[in-house]
Length: 241
Image 1 (cartoon, one colour):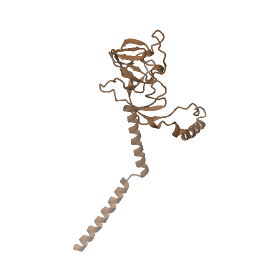
Image 2 (spheres, helix red, strand yellow):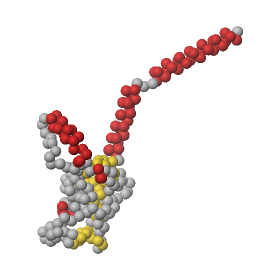
Image 3 (spheres, one colour):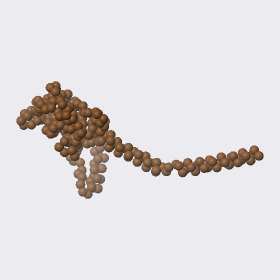
Image 4 (tube, one colour):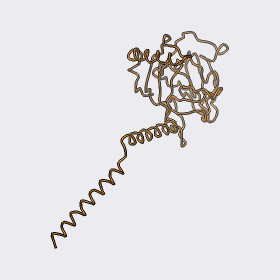
């Protein structure tokens, strides 16, 4: 009697083990499906990050030299000025150009709402005090232009309107900024520049881009592979701003 009972228990245990194996095989996802789901999750996370948190921008002019160089790629924190936080002195910001909101500009905040800006013989004053000079800012032209000829070297005094910011390029003699087209409304500011994540030296001899695009794409790939080591500005990668 006991032996028959043990045999029956053993059979039931075997049946249960086989049933568990079948369930596990059904529940186990194919490898391709696991990879696909992981890729989809990563893509969605990247899109959400891109839309709500950070954006990547390419610097396409020399107006911020030598802080930012043409060909620098920067990450911008889009949440930096949310929830009541406002731009501060010396922060580098990306904003919609007030005269053409379809274009994005990058400049440095020099004066805040309500402050008075004056430039005298290239020296910038904020509320009567000499403004801080960014480490990599520069003047490349020894000539000093009078205010009658240009606002580049002599400007103001000018009081910054409420909810607006006075911005300058660090390449002071070669930058179109608040001296020429006015202040930047807070609503136009898209975020704060955080760091340089990539930097590539522009090359006028690089292949062109036009129809038929396939041929140009092949040329670009070959040119990029060959010039990758020499055109990458390795010392700028990861540089904080």
